[in-house]
Image (cartoon, rainbow, N blue to C red; front, side, top):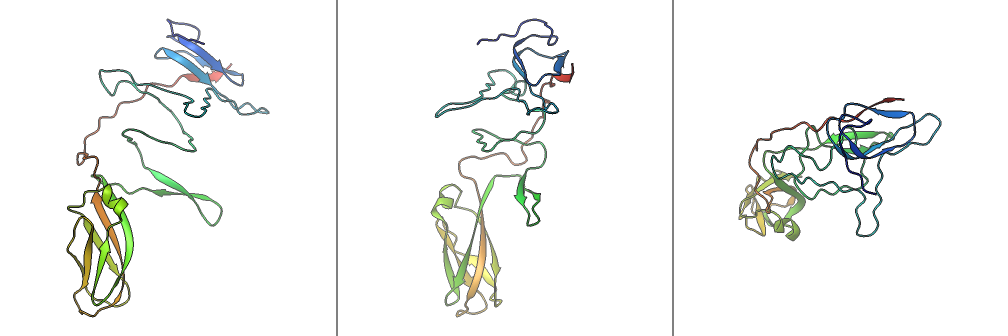
Length: 228
């Protein structure tokens, strides 16, 4: 089926190519502020199943729903997809820059059976981090960076943060290289004990601007709905 939006029609001030209304009892009300190829309206009617406005199913190698931003002018004037409300995705892959207006969080289960929100940490630059533990032998320890971690970060200058357990041996970091670093005890050449470390390094494949300025553009207005 091919749907081409034309001039004004009963669905708004500009036309829609295909209009699908699920459930019943729902009608669009003018004005729609732009031409629309497909309009899908879903509703949850009392006593009936929940209706979906637009549904896309993908088989192997396929894509259920595709939206292209094909405007070569102002990059902020067109949108491949706009969602004015919650979006549910069982698995979401973003193949380009991803910017969020508002906090980012993870929802985790609590022992009391509830779901709780934990917020992400933010930084003005793009950093990756890794964690581990080590043990002193004769007052020092050689720590090797995980090869996978080292492959994706800038290893000529990175940060190492130490936390010592047990005795206070005044640990410090020296001999940082692209493959690892050395931890030594200043208090005693024969010191022993365990410690943990946190390595923070810049992401290797991109160099984003520090505190990059962003211009926000409002998405197009959503169609308004009312009961028929």
